[in-house]
Length: 254
Image 1 (cartoon, helix red, strand yellow):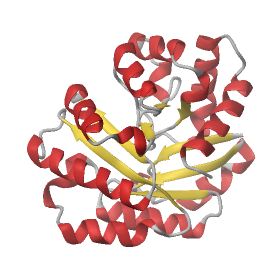
Image 2 (image 1 turned 45 degrees about the vertical axis):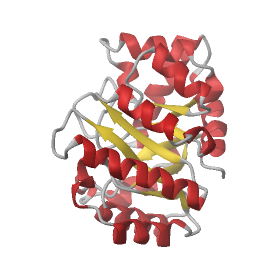
Image 3 (image 1 turned 90 degrees about the horizontal axis):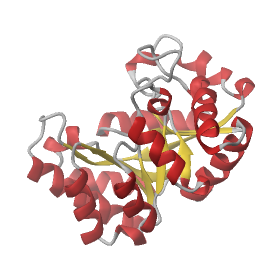
Image 4 (image 1 turned 180 degrees about the vertical axis):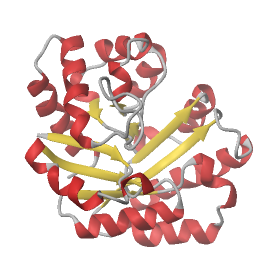
């Protein structure tokens, strides 16, 4: 059984066929999905989807690129919905220095604030970190994130950074990028990291694996990711799916 730990089915890319696609997942061996909030609006849509589909859960939070307009009232609202039955994490939160939409200091402020929220409501975090390796790690260490737990989504750094997060007890989210020919660094991380600390994710509609690179992604494509991980680990795709299913349940405390 496949567990997609990070999806965005609330995205407009799925407006035309969302229900049909989601209802097709079980037959393809996908047993659970977490829809991840990236803004206040997408968090509301994720909550709505989690209420509609038994196999779908929600994470609530605001992506760094959408953090510029955040207020304390918004944090209060996130806290108020975090206790809902199918909310399993605070996320995605973190730092993104690739897109210069929001000043770094503002991103840091709301990253710390959402880490504090996760600690308060006792939920794991889904961390987004792009081109911000040092600052992300420094903040997470300063905030004792080891005590919060969670996943580094779409892990994109090298083995040294992987070791830091593994030492903190975090899981690493692995998606379609591991199938790319030029993903040497990520493949080294997958070889290095213990299987019991890896989880599958799509980040759909983004980052579709080969042979669908560049097209709309969905949980239906995760078998390709499992195959790539299996090839790197010297085990079957089925073993990867089984292990990452159990890992995802531990990550989200299900």
